[in-house]
Image 1 (cartoon, rainbow, N blue to C red):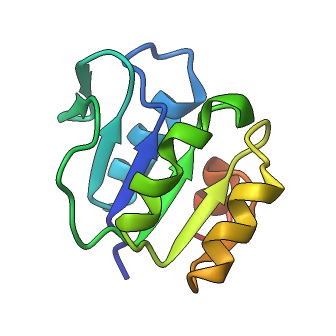
Image 2: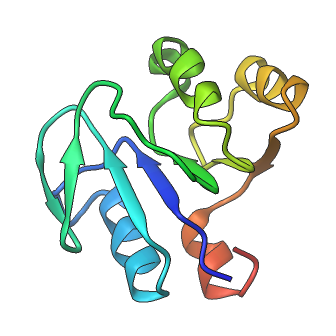
Amino acid sequence: MKKRTLVVGASDNPTRYAYKAATMLNEYGHPIELLGLKTGQVAGAAIQRGEPDLDSIDTVTLYVGTRNQPPLYDYLLRLKPKRIIFNPGTENPEFAQKARQQGIETVQGCTLVMLATGQF
């Protein structure tokens, strides 16, 4: 099943994990939306800024450090994703609890590893 995924912290820098995740998600056939601080393109998708009007997001995968997440809480929760993946370095018990209280699954894992091992 293909899962429409929002990559938060997207970057068009090929050395960044968010770039690698967006590219790999695309290769595996998952539609991607990208949210970042700077505009650009990754895997044919535009990096958007602010709070774009998105719907039908299955998965949010975070590449934004814990201290930069609070301004995103309300927006990401309004998207009503089925799950949020907290990649290494983004673990955030406060945000994870808020998400679970709204029935959103939270995963502490690595999107790249999850894709490569069929666990995505």
